Length: 226
Ligand SMILES: Nc1ncnc2c1ncn2[C@@H]1O[C@H](COP(=O)(O)OP(=O)(O)OP(=O)(O)O)[C@@H](O)[C@H]1O
Image 1 (cartoon, protein in one colour):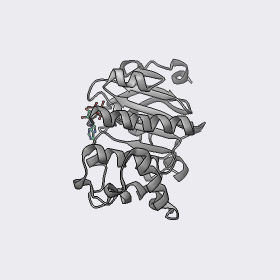
Image 2 (cartoon, protein in one colour):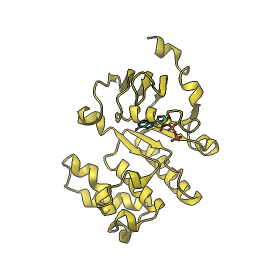
Image 3 (cartoon, rainbow, N blue to C red):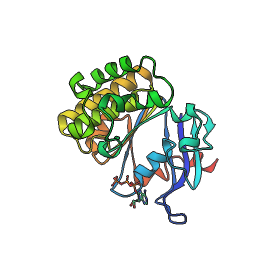
Image 4 (cartoon, rainbow, N blue to C red):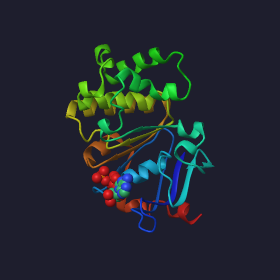
């Protein structure tokens, strides 16, 4: 289970944008998090994915409290997460061809062997044809690049997938395709999904339950008391 307990976080000490937020995601569960722009959803998602250290509160990953974030986190905790951001161009190294982008986490964790096969397999899953894999980000559309970013997020077979407005920049058919990929991944692996968004009907369709930002602070009073 992924548990966020009483998380307070932000960028300016003393003026946090996330205050006392609690949320849990069970293995195999998809939880949607809705809220207005700028309220702190992405910040909470980054805390959940161990990318941003909170000022206070606890993240508990499969029963183990997280003590360190980002590169200081133990590899098995860091690689338990796949993350897809809203703007693929901001999260893709412009120098890498799409195949290299997808393979990045494999190479970063010393898993070069079999990486070409894994990239080819995932490219098919996300709907990228082989000719696209040799292109660099500036030669790909937003939708094609987001497909590659989703493949990169899945390449290490994470147990938790954080989708931070993954489909906000995409057309309806690419949105449907990527949501289907995430859903198939969740069904076949039992991974838990935290999906952040503004699109209530989409999140309702996609997720087992949807939580509004206003309720995140009061969602689990028992957990917050303990
Ligand atoms: N790197 C940063 N440095 C300083 N402030 C930041 C940074 N990132 C976000 N913020 C601020 O923190 C607050 C919460 O931002 P966050 O991105 O978490 O909100 P959000 O709910 O995800 O918004 P949106 O739906 O528009 O993406 C905002 O006021 C934002 O301006």
